[in-house]
Image: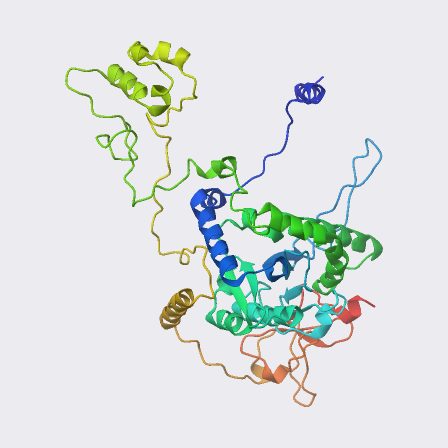
Length: 485
């Protein structure tokens, strides 16, 4: 029997230990999820709950997740010994569609909001999606500040929030959520915004804890079934709302949503939901607090946190070993357990007579990571805050004004005639001036109103045109109308 199989069977028989795959966590998440950041978040949450007296139906959480047109094939049953067991995907690399979802602590969920990687949004994009869903479009398919403001309008329309009955909306510190226009809209419609600490949403955000995991699994299963029932066809971004419509009722159940708010300590409010072992990954990576002077034992010890020695200075005529024994015996955990008449016999007797567990940390602290390097790259470091409060809003507005002043002016836009329009390498744009003005099949924008540098491609079957950014980027373009025939 192989060593691994023998060890597995032994552990199963004794029912003592188990072999499990460790959960990988980035260094940023391990460092940021510490007692200080979590306590700051719960302090702000307690302030908001005491100020507005929110109930479970008034506490909402919003977050985004991504879905692609290429699924991960699931496991299938095959004959033992068969070497070729395959599954079909619609491509090698998929196209991303962002889904924004909002749930509350009572277990309710509003229709999702889709963000498509297209030039303009059309209503037929979400025709097969969940009832009441809508969306927007941009070139990347990620959430932008304009898209988030549109989502807030979608949120107000379905929750019917107003200044008389306010709600609390919990969200992360993504830059698209921090625009002044979005904060002003929330203030005028009775939405109180509270942000999570940076890199802590994997433990503090209800959607990440109990909804998005099942949602991605069910979407992946639905995409697998779609590929098996549509032979020879490719899964496009216009089919994703249909997959979400099948997967969302199974993932965003009331029990799953409520369990996400319970396990994070948000509702019911429980600031002690996390124990010390939950913060253990951040212990040795905890950054030193510059406002406090690190000291191991006494005020006379070395105050350099990166020094090789954190012991007190030795008196004249003494040795390192005698001072080490003296420092240990003077520790409160040892003094409370050792009788005074036995206090000078040495370390061996102390270890036998001590009742309380002794940690070597007071003698020599565990190594800590150094201070973060101040670099000009990246944005400003965020923290948990009540975004709709006036001081926070004023600080964000000042930061936005500085960013606008540093930004170079955008070049002026001008329209080009069809003869000077850039074209794709294998297709040509409509150049016959006698023909009617062509419209994009996806975004319905006319060819004459195109901007400089935009490329148009022609469908191989119907001979109609589309923006290249509105297509899947295939070498031979087939529009969505001809592809579904």
